[in-house]
Amino acid sequence: MAGENLLPRQNRAAAACSVCEPFFETLSDHGLELKRSETRALQINVGFLCNQSCRHCHLDAGPDRRETMDRETVRQVISYARRCRFPVVDITGGAPEMNENLERLIGEIAPLAERVILRSNLTAMMQRGPRDLIRLAAAHGVVIVASLPSINATQTDAQRGPGVWEICIDALRMLNDFGYGREGSGMELDLVSNPAGAYLPVTQAQAERRFKLELQRKYGIVFNRLYTFANVPLGRFRDWLESTGNLAEYMARLSTSFNPCTVDSLMCRTLVSVSWDGYLFDCDFNLADGLHFGGSKRHVSEMAGPPEKGTPVITGDHCYACTAGPGFT
Amino acid sequence: METYYDPSDLGKFEEIGQEAPELAKKFFEYYGAVFSEGALSEREKALIALAVAHTIQCPYCIDAYTRASLEKGSNLEEMTEAVHVANAIRGGAALAHGVQMRKIARKLSM
Image 1 (cartoon, chains in turn brown, red):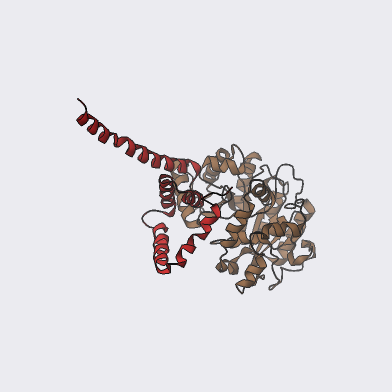
Image 2 (cartoon, each protein chain N blue to C red):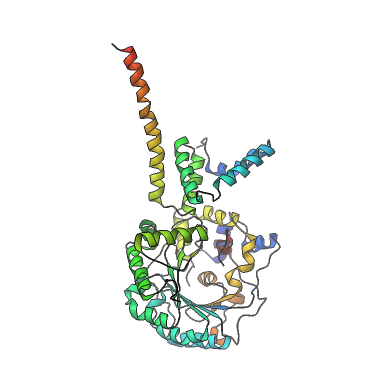
């Protein structure tokens, strides 16, 4: 499972807690509980196979990973979406474009949801031949959420690999040519920016203004919204933090930036994440850390309905990444 | 080896308020207001602070405003240019004082 390393889980938690108290204690100190609300979003992680090996990846996704959602699990996930009618479906990976069942998944699940999101690193989209996929996404009103950490080539390539910046710019231009991101087209193109290192993200509104200004001015690229998220200390990013001596300071930075106001609107309260093999998690980060929804393995095929309201969300110290500053909602 | 500057001391900055809390309160309120978004963005202010930090060669300030500049969305290229601005002003100021040197030398020389 992604996110595991040679240390047993208890030891890993202790390593993180050497600089911060366990997340559940911080919640308790503030008189807070983290329980599930009504589940509105189904996040589908179609696998850890990816064409990139980004340094900030919490899943340790990459070209050598073989975990990918098969046809039968796709069928079971679609069936679950049909039973529950989640308003939002969010398709992620790895690189979803590398899953051979993606077209089927989009085609069959889009009619079941009000909003379908496809997360893309852009380079995988370009590798597979993007035009048919963009047409399919557009035909089903799929929102494309693309990763772009920075408006700077050096920072982008440092996080995501050499040459990624140029391909991303080409991909965004192509998406714009199809109408994605253009005002009045109804085709939503959002960007996601994660810091290219062991520091907190830029305030979302400020970053969005600057990204819009610079991408338009330098490259003629337009988009709808920018989301900025803190890097989550799991998987390859955690390994990088450890190997560069940044882990303790980063955990301290996250935990001292704990903002109790974020807890009520955390995405894990309203989202359920399904792994490539069909198991449920409160979020993609718990999926990365092997922390199953409800504390035990529950397969999507066994679920009669959405997760029950009031079920406690399983937490770990990585949760500090979602509650730092303005938070990850 | 002990040094005068310890990175962890930066976190103790607010302890300066223990002996003169009213003055510290005024300072930290002013400090916070200075760095909040105004006619200049928080990112631009962090870059100015980074340049000034190099001019006064304050290790705490360099540490704090390197991180702040990154967190406000600047990149290494921009931050390096900011340090060059500080350098140009410092170096330019030294060189401009050459005018004094030349004036005095001319007066003393035949």
